[in-house]
Amino acid sequence: MTERFYPKPGRYFAALSDDRPLFQGDIIRGVFGAWWRHPESVRATLAGHPVPVEPRFPTLDELRANVLVRGKGYGMLLPQPCEFSEGEKGATQPFRVVAPLFPLDRNADVDHDRVRKGLVGHTIWVPRWSDSGPQDHYVDLRWTTSVDATFIDRGGRVAALSRASWLAMVDRLSRYYVGIPVDAAAFAINQGQLHPDATD
Image (tube, rainbow, N blue to C red; front, side, top):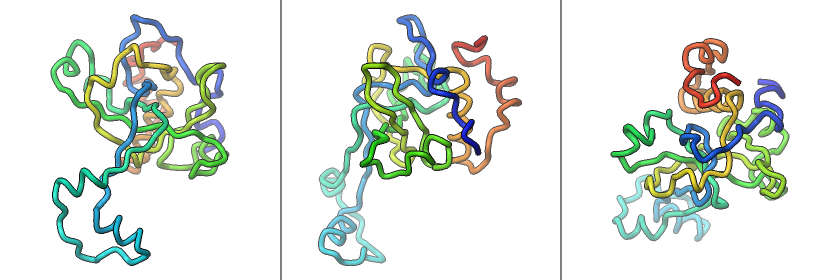
């Protein structure tokens, strides 16, 4: 991977319109990530003790009490488009898989330059999407979460990926979940027409 893993900021986003369908990679407002922590791990960590090798299975109440919700209120829609298509499967199934965005600032848990160059495998760099919007962010795929479809609609969308950014995102998902890079040229030929801006 090189500094050209992602498009330049000026080519990163597509123009938004009310009639543009929801699509893979859309940035949605009001979405967070959740991590189901094991209660015995939480207790051991707080006490400064090692985590039990064979912890007991927690109760549902314990799980609910120890779930950690994180993010700054923005998330990226991850699945392939047919999974949430407004007129097809998305009209009947209520699950939407997202990953939260985190600010890429001095408090970030990742190296800024490496994220921007595509060198941090569990992240997707997202530059500032408007002059008045927040700073650069990164998607953390380790926080991938399933949310109710009610969280996801066009009115809450703040940004959409250009075709070039979408291809980079698909490559990142394949590298992270499968360990295999996408042949960008072949994918663009075979699947590139799926993007709303396939002619750009």
